Image (tube, rainbow, N blue to C red; front, side, top):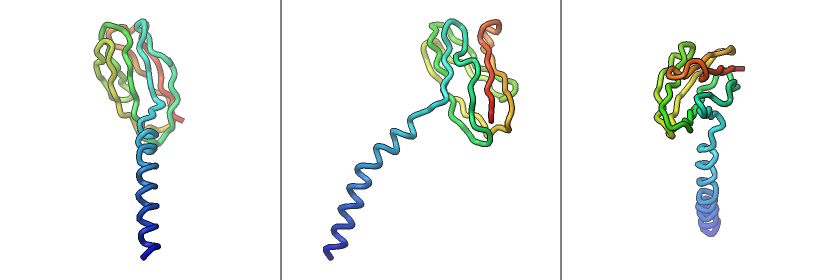
Length: 114
């Protein structure tokens, strides 16, 4: 009986301690593209091939921009000073071009899947 109580306490403490850490790790998104001065940064983003990823596009300009890619089959407007999430992949190894449709001359970049 004492072992069952001890096991229940250990399970409770383990869940109480580890659950917030798992949520924190899941919220850490290393795939972020920032729009500033009508340019994307980084202009080259490396991602793992064969995996679906969550890409955050953070528009730090006051005007809207469009994240568009014929290669990725994506087109999404990002309002000024807002963020969007774009799910990509899984991709084959290669280079995928993206651009800002509202500022094509300056807003462009590539995603490399390796």
